[in-house]
Length: 323
Image 1 (tube, rainbow, N blue to C red):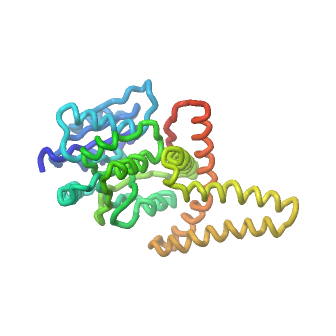
Image 2 (image 1 turned 90 degrees about the vertical axis):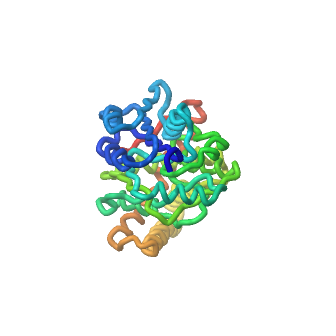
Image 3 (image 1 turned 90 degrees about the horizontal axis):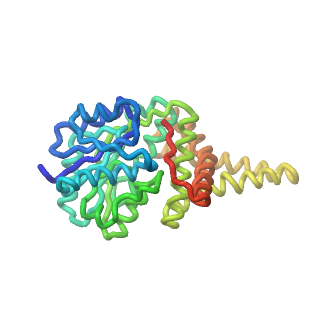
């Protein structure tokens, strides 16, 4: 499959995770481009030592994963584009055999624009935050609307969609996938392991910041694609705005009103808990993740407000980091 595949890895201060990522790419018959977003941990030197072609983004412009992926595509284009590009985040390692399986699927179905697989956390049981990420990644195989940043993309589809939107700082992969579909291509998730991810979320503050980032993505995509992630935004409005307001009204009028609000949060927790158990999450982790899912609406709201304030002020959409 020589010449069919190019690989674009992106990162910022990923350290050991980047080394594992680049090691997983060695031996593949593909050009490897690593795009760095202002790392200060020696990532650029490491990537060069491991044989990757390195692109360092201009620090005078806001960093985004979308901008980095576009820069990787441009670097491949300069010496002749392959037929397919595997995008991978610098905190992920490709699973052996994945690229061959994805290319076969692409060759067998010319209408496919994006092929993705399963991402798994390498330390899923270390913390509830990691376990929550692992659960997020494990979605059913088959036709999909959108996926995460680890994906194989047909170059023709990338070009027709216009690449990634560099102004989208979170859920940029969703936004890209929606335009791939608008360009007339299909997207699919194969029932194969694709990447091993290292979220490395050890503290509540990291999870909170990541949830703010998610909320920013909900709002920004709502502005670009109003129908996408609508339910997620509605849940935030309901659990982080409406119910707290009703609770406060109940404190000044009727205790029962406030009690019903508390019951609504408990009901949300129980639905989340039962759903997690049905999805195969352990009884040890399910209660912790269910609590996080219930709480997440509040940092999500902060992220949504942050986006709208940035948009109102006309300021750049700066990345929100949690590592």
